Image (cartoon, rainbow, N blue to C red):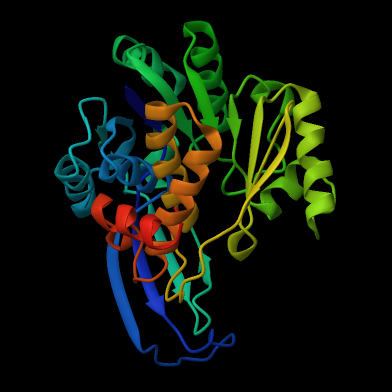
Length: 306
Ligand code: RIB
């Protein structure tokens, strides 16, 4: 059961800070970590770590980061035969600041990710047609995202869209054919322009998307767990309580692990639980992909917390 991730890669430059400097001020930060990231690559790595057969469509720059990014994906057993290096462009990079409360603030510079075009989907069509699920985020052009959704519909492949980072220009009409739409609360608010301050409001906003045609909306709500809304009703999955050190990439961890479990079981609620466990373990360590747990750790964690 193959999963295709069509999306971004970034090099994460993570500074662990006591506070942000004021304009014109220089302050020392206690720690720094360099790692592979990008929402697409993170989701691909999370799924592959869970045991999925993953292929990735992404573009890297012809700088010192590009080769390393593809090597990193290869090391996780991800099929990179449709990944390309763009001559003369820099790779995507993400300066990230993690504060003392383990919360992150992220800047992204897309670089070569901007060059992933609809024609790249056509080039990879034969391989993509072997996939059961296409996973998308919004760190590549919207044109490519819409094309991938239409490709999925045409070839009977389910599509999961994680609308991150939030884009107010996302066209609801062009995403309504997604099987899964997986925003966090603020992304849900941006798209629906509705309040999401409590569970009732989240449900109302998610139902707005269901009425527009999306089959399943899964809202990730951090420490408040996740909520599945579809034509059958609403199901809340609580989150696992852990001591968070660094929440960077936790949403991607959930999506990658959920995708692996879903293509294997077709059980949405069970897959949300597995995704929550994988994401919970990831926030107990520093870094993005570096923090993703081994399947045996997830299994033991689920057994201990069921
Ligand atoms: O979701 C976390 C990711 O967002 C980071 O890895 C960073 O690269 C940005 O894409």
